Image 1 (cartoon, rainbow, N blue to C red):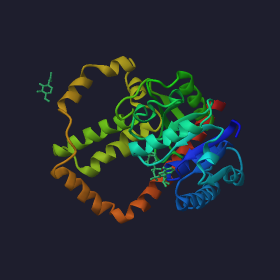
Image 2: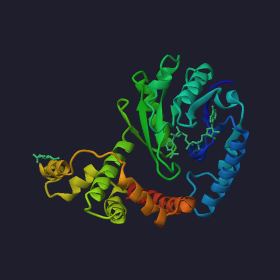
Image 3: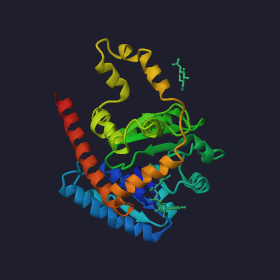
Length: 318
Ligand SMILES: NC(=O)c1ccc[n+]([C@@H]2O[C@H](COP(=O)([O-])OP(=O)(O)OC[C@H]3O[C@@H](n4cnc5c(N)ncnc54)[C@H](O)[C@@H]3O)[C@@H](O)[C@H]2O)c1
Ligand SMILES: *[C@@H]1O[C@H](CO)[C@@H](O)[C@H](O)[C@H]1NC(C)=O
């Protein structure tokens, strides 16, 4: 099959594969989703159909094309070649197991055209660990979405040492085109960037609960009703710049180091506190209600993402 600049291949039709399919379809790409489980594929088809109609009714659909067209843009197949051959870009979304990744990237290497690019959705595995030795390794990288990807647009691009920088730039533009928000790492780093920032916040929250300074419920409010409300619009560096008369430099006095140092070394998230926090959540959000609570979260994130889109349209028209 000839190279097709509007064709996207998605490998794996779980949570992340479905989201990527919907995102690319919203930008009018022809998406072909492959899974080695026919049952998963038919679930995915049904779920995508339901979700896109629901989003359309709530006026939360991404992109400017009608819902029916978006649905028609997505095909499902158990035939690997039908998905991959001639695709401009292929996004791998199979389970987080290095041996599986290695096998699928090897298979991809054998069928992809020299103009194609392959991105892995992996949350934590540097792609050099599964693309080394492959013919097309300069056209492979990590393209890490944020959950839930349909509403949270940040996408980390993590090149392996041998990924061509033009390839990174091309994926960067592709992500912008489909209204994701790409950020580019210059090299592979353990944990990538978003998880590292997230872990720093988690670590500090844990330590303050451990030291008996604040309750579990209250430390979460520091983010949801405090920092998080600003962070929906700007990061910690810009926040610092806006908060001080003399801007950023003023906000970086030794004080920052002293406070951080005072919180002591990193803790392992284990021991009695682990049980205590789990118990606390079991009471407030029992495991059997997790799905319901996730749906609650997604509705709010969806509304926020729409609000952010509307606001940025205002910015652009100003
Ligand atoms: N879930 C998240 O929050 C999240 C966020 C960012 C990135 N990721 C990453 O995205 C990837 C996919 O995660 P997910 O949550 O969608 O997983 P998932 O388990 O929901 O889906 C995986 C899919 O891959 C299919 N599959 C398994 N082996 C296959 C093979 N050899 N060929 C084709 N299909 C195969 C399965 O049938 C399933 O449909 C993982 O690497 C994960 O780390 C997940
Ligand atoms: C940094 O913190 C440690 C305790 O974690 C403390 O012993 C040390 O005195 C602190 N250093 C400074 C300069 O405050």
